[in-house]
Length: 435
Ligand code: ADP
Ligand code: MG
Image 1 (cartoon, rainbow, N blue to C red):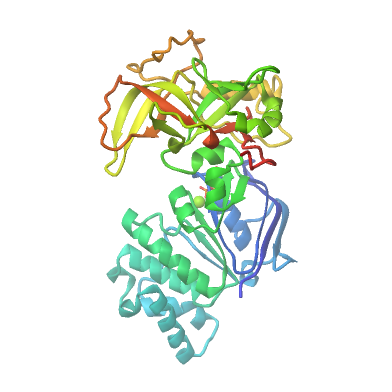
Image 2: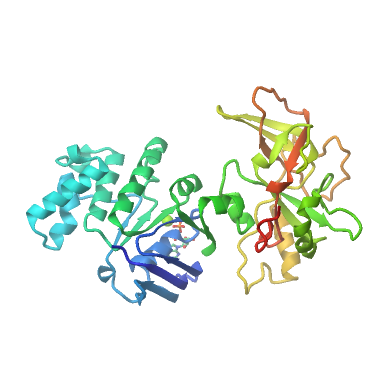
């Protein structure tokens, strides 16, 4: 049976002064499978190596089965780890490679051979056992490596991007196999990947890391529909969520609106309960998040939809779907970088203004042939603002051309709002049932 794993405000600063992991707290129950997701360089391997005992912990506490483990040598942690390029012993057969950990601890030869067969059956490599690594394909070698890691049923199984060197088709097939094999061992498993699609396909629970800091832990559904911040919203899902600048107006005597620059969205009255909560951010620069499926081309509105006029800037054929790139006169943005509670984004100015400044500096530069305004005569924008594209899925069976003017509807129930630091303010974190 696996060990529970608890990270309590774990941090790692390398001797170079680089802070790779910052204040990460999370808990895995014994036997749980957790996916650790984040972009390259965000600290995933560092975190895993601290759990394995291959990297010292600079601050915080690691508990294995509720016992302090910060200073436990790797050999006493009962942890197995596999990497992207896992080295097998080239002169040994697959069977000998898999049996190696058992032989090393002096297990009975007959029992070891039986264990190898069981593991090989589960991994579908029984017929390959007499081959050497050179006689195996990349995917087969990775299965042998898996077999070697799980044969002694480690309490903790750490997998650091184990599939990223394989081709796309093999990756998809192996990831589901891995999941079922690992589940049956009962080992507590942390699976690291930078691939959000892989994480979503695998994860019961996914922990998202960025800039060394934990952003959110949740099910794939929670990360997609209720992202804690703009980073998670933009990291999870393809095509990426559309993020545009908007300002909320909440007059005492009239309906609430979100201004997207040249056009605005009227909030449905049914969102009234949320209205009071939203007043807090009125007048502030917000990020409006619209997933592609929150937008559709139509002029027939339902009660929860609000119209925008869009100009087609690019048509992207994808085979199973066609993506429309349009502009609605709004300013697009990347999510703000991770802000640690106690620090400002900038040495000067208030946190809010500097965060806004960072946002504005990251606004995408326009392509030269990109129209800057929609048909709805947009007021001229200051120079440092740039109009960007929104992406939505095209309606089946309709042809679109660059320059077409389209009626686009926004499903207001799918709208997300983030404050200048990127934290989600709508749907409200403590008020999820807006409707
Ligand atoms: P990931 O696995 O998410 O790609 P890593 O944990 O490997 O990220 O690295 C996180 C950050 O720490 C990176 O910026 C990397 O350059 C840095 N880093 C990794 N190892 C060391 C080291 N030994 N010394 C200094 N910096 C390191
Ligand atoms: Mg790594």
